[in-house]
Amino acid sequence: MSGRQRVDGQTAFILHSYAYSETSLIIDVFSRDFGRLPLLARGARRPRSAMRGVLQAFQPLELAWFGAGEVRTLARAEWLGGMPMLGGTALLLGYYLNELLMKLLPREDAHAALFNAYATTLQSLAQSRNGSVSATTHLRQFEKALLRELGYGMVLEREAVTGEAVLPDRLYHYLIERGPVLTAANHEVAGDQIQGQTIRGKTLLDLARDDYADPRTLSESKLLMRMLINHYLAGQALQSRRVFLELQEL
Image (cartoon, rainbow, N blue to C red; front, top):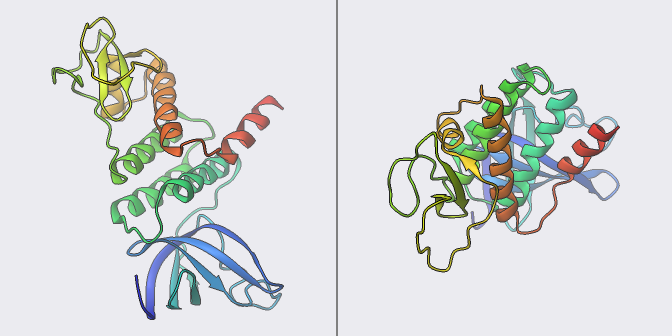
C-alpha cells in the first residue's frame, strides 16, 4: 500500500496494542484485504473516547483508516458482534494465535484464506471445552493454514524422497521444508540432516485429514508442529507458551 489512501468498511481483528503518548494507542490489526498493519488510534485512551470500549482483541471490528507511511491513522471502529468472549485456556490459545501472526506474517501481506481460518478458529475456541480434543483440532488446522499461506505447506501423505504413499504402520522422520522420510531407508538426502522426533505414518495421515481421536496422534502432531513453527520463528520466543507452561506448573 503506497501513497495517501483512505480505506473504509474493512473487517479486522486487533492482534496487539500499546500506549502511544498519554491518550493514544498503536494497534496492530489483521485485516481481511490488507493483511497485518499498524494504526494510530488517536485519543483512544481517553476515558470518554468512543473507541475505548471497542478496541478489543479477539472481536471482529469494522475499521476505517487513512494516511500514508508506515503507520496510518484510525478514523472509525465499530464492533461487529457475533463472537463469544474467550476465557480460560481459550484466551491463552487466542494469544498464541496472535503471537504467531505478529511474528510470522509480514506487514501488508493480504491472506484472505488465513483471515477466515483465524476467525473460524477463534469462534471454535470460544465454544470448545478447555483442553478438549476439539480445541487441539482447531489449533492444528490454523497452524497448517498459516504455514501453507506463508509458502511452507506440509507434505504429509507422500514420502519426501521416493514420492511413495506414506504407510500408517511405518515410522518416519520429518525433514523441514522437505517432508517425511522412512527411518529405515538408506536414501541419500543431499545436504539434509534427518532430525526431529520419530513419527508414525498413521500420525502423518491423521494430521493430513485433521483426525486427532488417537491420543498418540494428538501428542506426535503437537511435537511436529512445534518443531516446524520453532524453525520458522528462527529463535523468536513465544510469551504465550511461557505463560501457559507456568500456569500448568502452578
